Length: 255
Ligand code: ZN
Ligand code: FE
Image 1 (cartoon, rainbow, N blue to C red):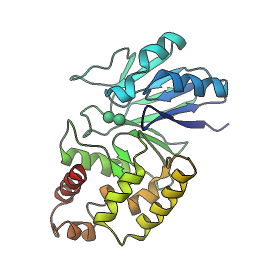
Image 2 (image 1 turned 45 degrees about the horizontal axis):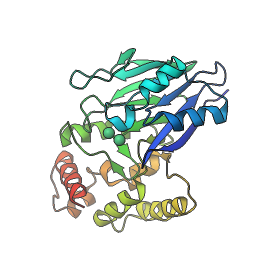
Image 3 (image 1 turned 135 degrees about the horizontal axis):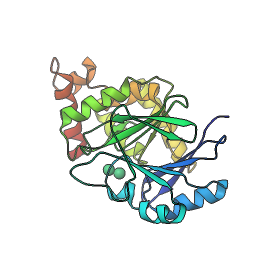
């Protein structure tokens, strides 16, 4: 039996996500921006919450933990985080650890940059990556606690995953990301195709997520800092990928 994944909007532009194992009936929420939409999604499916997998400490990813834990008695898995402890965590995980949700297995990837403790969860068998505020569709998270080089290294780590990986990110930011990306790569055919597709999805009231990692590699400028054309486009031909990434991220901050 294959895992089932549900995605639903939370707060202004966050995503809530559930992954369910039909064999054991275990269900995990990946980040919980708020409790109510998570409860509603569970009730729609007739599922009960066994786990919460937390990616990082920001309130828009953790605010629902206390209420959901009280309601379901679920286990909370969170990153090791010396600086900003995540309350109510039962299990702390780091690079290379695995987390079981029933019979489903997620591999923990440390992806620092947005925050220092940010982790992503890769369900290899399901080809599903939950990367919250590290990698967005056609974007990446703001570098708040880490350094741009650290963020670039995290994105390179995610980029190494298989092309058929479905990318579940933390926010619906795709249209704004595309608008910016086109200022750097106006002639990127994959990006232009993504612009058309995402505009249609939003017009139909659908999320632009998940997206395929293989498509992101072609269209997401933040995964392309080591492409010579991108370096040239920001006036840094011949410079290191980390320098190019830093410049692109800086331009997005001001955009
Ligand atoms: Zn965040
Ligand atoms: Fe966030």
